[in-house]
Amino acid sequence: MAMMAMTIRNSASRRTMMSRPIFGSRSMSSWWKNVEPAPKDPILGVTEAFLADPSPDKVNVGVGAYRDDNGKPVVLDCVREAERRIAGTSFMEYLPMGGSVKMVEETLKLAYGDNSQFIKDKRIAAVQSLSGTGACRLFADFQNRFCPASQIYIPVPTWSNHHNIWRDAQVPQKTYHYYHPETKGLDFKGLMDDVKNAPEGSFFLLHACAHNPTGVDPTEEQWREISQLFKAKKHFAFFDMAYQGFASGDPARDAKSIRIFLEDGQHIGISQSYAKNMGLYGQRVGCLSVLCEDEKQAVTVKSQLQQLARPMYSNPPLHGAQIVSTILGDPELKSLWLKEVKIMADRIIGMRTTLRDSLEKLGSPLSWEHVTKQIGMFCYSGLTPEQVDRLTSEYHIYMTRNGRISMAGVTTGNVGYLANVIHEVTKSS
Ligand code: PLA
Image 1 (cartoon, helix red, strand yellow):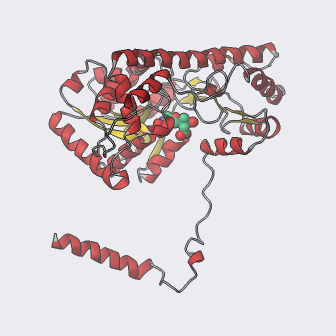
Image 2 (cartoon, helix red, strand yellow; image 1 turned 90 degrees about the vertical axis):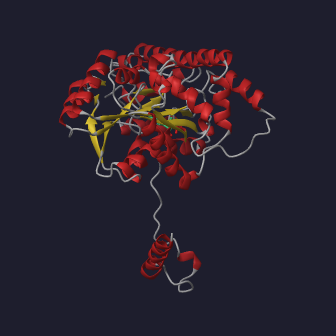
């Protein structure tokens, strides 16, 4: 104890001597004079620009946030009912560091399966996280702390924030082939070669379903091959599952990739998020889980995950967790949720067809087959950054410069306009 106090004092005084400016030697306004403005976020920056545009024609297909066919944000009926049931409860205490036990229990069933032996054997270390981002970050910090020499393989392309997350967690990044720009499909050979050539026991980030931004997923057969290769190479798969239900409309089906790895006896990690599939974006509710050797190891790993959470945010928020556990803990509300997920997924699939048909009817010289082939929330359109810039500056269409269209923002009311202007900027290419 005395040693520890000394160490802390020593390092604090060293810092004081070396780098702290002497108070009073400069005006207060100069404290942050060397701070440069941060670059705009490639996704959330689009929303900022959209909000600042006064045009009545503006369309936001940037961020992946679901809208109904009138372009309005949606609160699911199951969520409304859960809120009604929660209202007036007197519990406002802190959750434990690992979050709501009930919520975590229900969440694990969605990923590992209702009757998962791993759940029964208590082999999963799991904590409630600050949505999917928080789960990824907590895992990245855990990886850095306990496998400090490791790196992470990330697909090309991927959700832009993956790079920020592992960068800030000080884990070096490598990439692996994923998308083939010519076929607008999976570069399966490139992916397998990279998995094969990575040093044995590498960490890989995989999108469990509805890959962001491409909308391209491996087939079931390909997942089996990937899993076998991971097993042979003793790699660790970390699944980011931010869109469970949005690929097929059925959360159980969308967990197929994970189930294949589990059947093969692999030890995996999973990030789960309720932002999209329950529409709980701002509630920040999700889960990080790590499958361990046995119960004892799971208890140990969980204690370390909690230890990482404690100095960052202490414990996760209560309300979203209550909503989730109320819905998933009640068979009727759960089946209502499943219906509503399917409605959202189906509306997006319908919009894909309409967008493609509209472009074809306009006589576009390009193929738009990929619009309906890709799945999930996003269409990786193939539009160039320059074409996207034109769409934004001339036609008030807001989307990320990599050509990703959030299909969740496309509606019966704007799909015609969107097709027209996409045709306008692409017809001579
Ligand atoms: N993982 C992937 C692959 C994602 O696309 C997103 C969200 C997350 C994790 C994190 O979501 P959560 O923290 O809200 O649970 N991607 C969004 C939003 C929808 C964003 O960029 O934050 C997107 O537009 O790509």
